[in-house]
Length: 243
Length: 284
Image: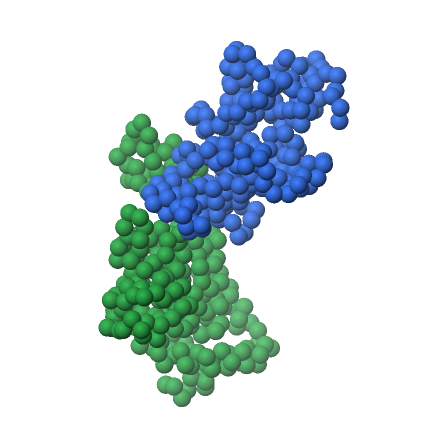
């Protein structure tokens, strides 16, 4: 698709959203039987699946830390996840995304509870539509909770950007490609930022305003993450019924 | 309401002194650290709905030997860490060269965690009356965090289960469950235990389980046409079972708690009169 003339018309974006609106989200917890924890996450056109294994033995051995667990995060895009076939396997981009996503989650994981062990997180992108790293982090954080791994809190992630000189929340593919800035942010529900990247240019004021927008986006996502986790056991636990 | 489902990071209490397992304290407030069921009675604790077994000294667990090294058996204990059973922790004095004569790779043991050091080196022992090798029956796996539920309050759930199914059941803290019993009884016990695991967080579990066991038994009785088939099935199973019986009679009781003897008597009573009677006849 070539660059559309206008990305925002009368305050409405190409896909009909308002500037501060996130795309529809669909979450399913515990979709993989073999994994210790798993999650399927749809974020607009993004479809990702996250699996968590562990804590488990570390292979290769030399990677293990004697006082805490090692967290390993593998972000991978399926070859069919984008229009033009993506050459399978890790590349510069996916290695970078893996690293920053791992660092977005590590601060909330109680790694010191499991010395000499590994917590493996796998994120597979089945369909990509701008914002896959944020979708991956959202999914991985739910999968970690599903695996019973002790954490300080969940992590929610959301991007903010600038198109047609307007700040917009949660960019889609066209806005990402033809926009002026893209800034993915991950944070805990109490507002601690664990990931912040930016490509493009924002003024100081735009940055501040964008951060606030991203914050409200993350809070909305956090609520949905919580609801999804609770739903896995809904109908089974009601009120004071638990013994 | 003092129990509820919580996610990591959920606020639980203002009193940091109440913080127990599954929680963490920040700025004097208690938060949940896992996804699980929080109880706010006396202490604030959260029982996770899933997770791996983390060994602690004093845990009675079921392990499976994975390797025989120079003076240790290396034991899989269903945890991120492997268990080490030193040769000196075997009840009898044996030579290094004879180790795999007593316990070889693949053998299952009931063992006790004696020590876990900060780097998570797990030491095991077999030096106790209740500890020994498992030679018969079946071992199934359940989520370790559900073990307390399976045992029930002061052993009520497990006592009921043993009674109703005529099986001997031992539950390791690491979520491995060892069951011995006659073919059909064993199947029923396995079904019941998996049901408990699936529904451990739902209310009224004990009642539902009693009903479940009753229904299953009724089903069995209401199939007179199938009796011949049943008979044959039992016979095949019994061939293996008989071998087991010789050893298990003395051994199993040693492992189980006081209740065992009388329960076993009951089991015997129920057996006589059943189809099994003729088959077991010569053994009595």
